[in-house]
Image (cartoon, rainbow, N blue to C red):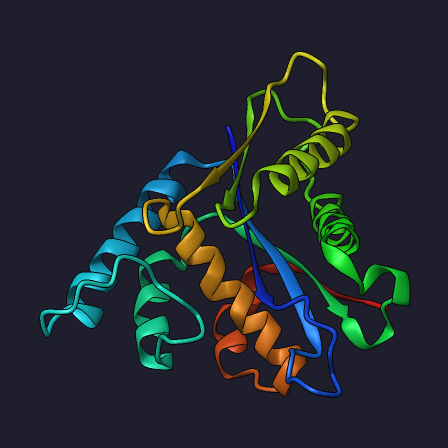
Length: 215
C-alpha cells in the first residue's frame, strides 16, 4: 500500500499591507510504500514525545515543526533516517498569485487544491498494485473537504489502474503519527524559502525528491 501524508506550512493570507502573512505556502507529502516505515515513524514520534517533549509533565500529543527545537528534530530523524520514504514539496510564491484567487474562501481553496495536485503529480505510483491512502490533516470545513477529495481523487485516478482503490482521509494530526512527520519536514522546506534558514532542511535533504517553487 502507498501511504501519503500531506501537510502545509505558511498560510493563505494576502493582506500584506495591514497584516503579516507568510510570503510563501509550502505543501509537502511524505510518501512511502513500506509498512515498516509507517510503523517506525509511529515509534519515532511516540519516543520523541516521551523522551524529549513530555519529560516535565507536559502532555503534547504531536510534533510541530514551528515549535520543536532543532535538537529534538534531529533526535526524531535519527530514528527514521534509514527508512524508505521520500518527501515531495511545492512552495507557492504568494506575492505573485492572481488577484481573483486571493479573495474569498473558494478562490483560496482552489489555489490550495491545485498546489496539492502539483505535488502529487510527481509521486511515481503509476505502477501501484496496492491501494493508495492519502492522509490529510483534518482542518477543512465540510464543503472544502468534499471539493478537495473530489478534485484530488479525479487527478489520482487518472494515473493508476481502475482496480486500484484510492482513499482520502482527513484525520486529527494528534492521532495520525505520519502527519507529525510530514509537518516537521514541510516546515523545514517552508523555512528554507520563507527565511533562507536551511539548518533543519539540510538534515533530511537526501530524502527530498521534489522541492519546487511555483510562481
